[in-house]
Image 1 (tube, one colour):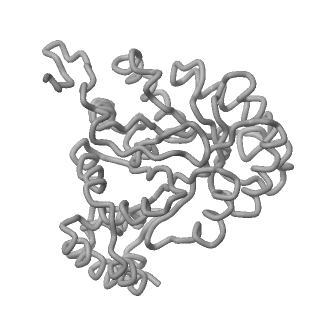
Image 2 (tube, one colour):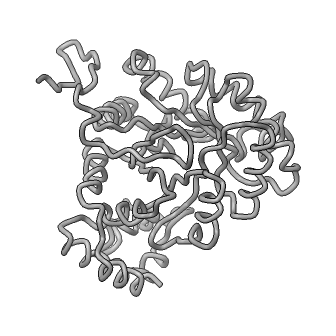
Image 3 (tube, one colour):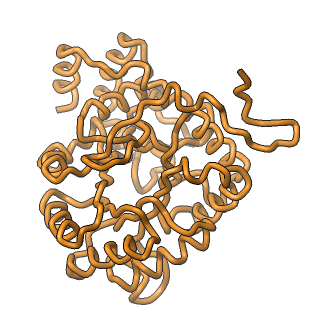
Length: 337
């Protein structure tokens, strides 16, 4: 059986056994099954990056059965460039496979100057999605998210905009991101009244950031909504990258907005202890960290980024060992509490 993805002419032909080994999980009570691991294009897909590397990562993802691709209007840099690069690759390689893909984008963070390019107004969300669709060359996305709560715009306006977007056929499903339990409950009630399929809350979740366990997962369960977890590796802390110090070219080494050397130093003993558990499981720490999130029934998928196809392949190996013993879970809890 031929499973090659590249012919001599570099025409992409998808792996014909791509669905055989991927795990798929139901998203809340919806009809949608998502791959347990999805690909996020937050990093490595902007105009500053090598589009051929991005193309290779996307081909590898689909060949591994990863059908869900996650974007946002502001991904890049510069903002919008990840969507544009994805649109270019989609046209080159994935046009025949569009109906096998579940494509997401979002709006909610600053995108353009003036009062209409940020947060959650109807004006911003609808205008932003129209721009996103043009950049990607799509008629619709599969799910459109409001990217973060807006403290000043009535939730009725924001959810009403999502409802109209779905009714117009510009998105098949509505989602929210970074919403806590109370706002999620209100959003779910509003969208139910509007008869709009609300299927996902995208939330930050890792061994080092467990806030979703304080009510959000239960709220999602009560409303038949799935959770998709981002930053599962805590910006790289839950990998083997920092076990022997802080590399100069790492996020912590460069004191990025999301991670600095002090945070790593404060957590290094925990990282080493967790790595020992992963080694006993014959996993990398990153693989165990992903598996640990997937143990939650309400988590439909874990979003990972990748700087190379090999890195993506390593992350997908997390699915080879998803089970935890009670002793392992107890020990992990003791380490990360």
